[in-house]
Image (cartoon, rainbow, N blue to C red; front, side):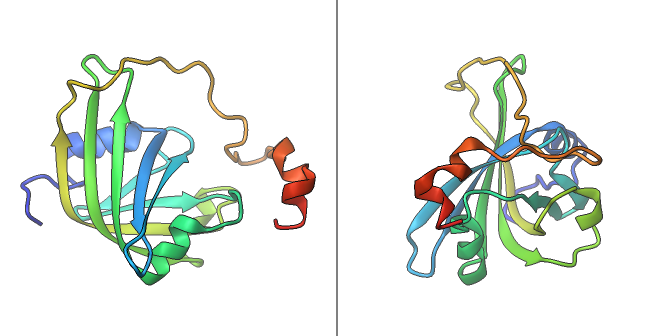
Length: 165
């Protein structure tokens, strides 16, 4: 790791595990980038050990752009941003991802398709001065919860999507 920070550091661990969203950057085999929003319940990203974080992959649009990229190019970037903190804060985690359909954490995430683990190569804070201050208005009702039926979004019933999903 090129930094003194790592996800197991107490401050970084607390920050990562209290977030309910992050942005995931991946690239395909030819280096073409994708950036995806990943959201869940508070703490849906877990710090597994000093160098590893894990998060669930939930049903999305069925394109598997990010996860397909991970299969051919496991290098990823994760950007965590706290828009509501005082002051706002962000943290970058770069690493190598793996996908496991039988990961021991899978039962902890209702409706997760599989678990993604990222072994950190770099973890570092990022300058917060341009982070816009925002407030949470509402959490997504589509995040799966144990014992609750997750609604199907209307767009998945649309003619354009029905045949491809």
